[in-house]
Amino acid sequence: MEAIVKTDFNFPGQNGHYVGKVRDVYSIGDDYLVMVVSDRISAFDVVLPKGIPFKGQVLNQIAAKFLDATADILPNWKIAVPDPMVTVGHKCEPFKVEMVIRGYLSGHAWREYKAGKRTICGVEMPEGMVENQKFPQPIITPTTKAAEGHDEDISKEEIIAQGIVSKEDYEQLEAYTRAIFQRGTEIAAKMGLILVDTKYEFGKKDGKIYLMDEIHTPDSSRYFYAEGYEERLAKGEKQKQLSKEFVREWLMANGFQGQEGQQVPEMTDEIVDGITERYIELYENIIGEKFVKAEGENISARIEKNVTDCLKSL
Image (cartoon, rainbow, N blue to C red; front, top):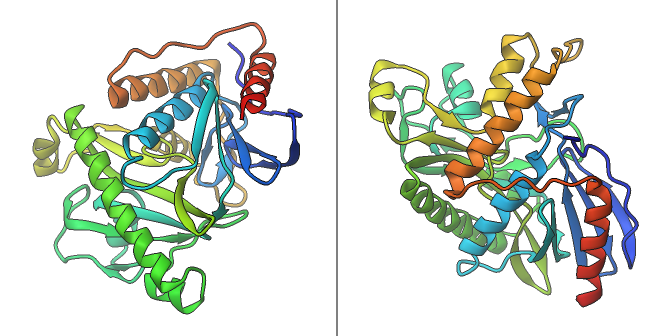
């Protein structure tokens, strides 16, 4: 099955095209965006040389479900999902920060903690914690949104002092972040999962804040299996998790962390197929439904037709 790693569409009314690490975003007039979730995969801020078949579909469909499941908390950008790999939505002016929220000491926060730091993004972390332990309450650790290269940790105080986001808007973003994370936590618990940490992006349209981009996908979030969590924590064992972390771990085990001079290890067909299977497993565990592969001879032609039909109806 082919992986879609490059797109070059020309949709009706198109007046701009942005290529991200994974998503290709097409501007339609002043009001709409078409987001094509490609099968590219990135880790350590590097796009890996091979695409992962069905990854784009997995991410797009998970995000769509969670946008719908949180729409009562705040408006979001989604208008339609005309194709399994595509969302069409409102064009918003994005805030230049990503709101990262952490319920557990994992990933980047743990690496900082292990290095002896007890403050991250201006937030104090308690002494005496172990990897993957639950925080007394979730902490918000925002990052700046880098156009290229690495996103940087930043504190609430710095964001407001530098005028990146106004105090009033930032406090609203924090309130939304906590509310969406709480909803995601509740949904995950019903699926036997723990939502460990995640990130959200927000924007503004007509003076109103919207939730944008993806939400609660394995690319933006980390999930643990709830069953056996306490036992593994007590024994100091690795948690069984659903996230992109397994890709990072494979890269690190093969000497790659995105640093200068390091080579991405060879992505054999076996590795690629294995990653596809893990993404499908993620989908089925997070959503609780069988994943239906959107197969076809020409995926690009299918997307072009589906999106064109959708835009004509807006």
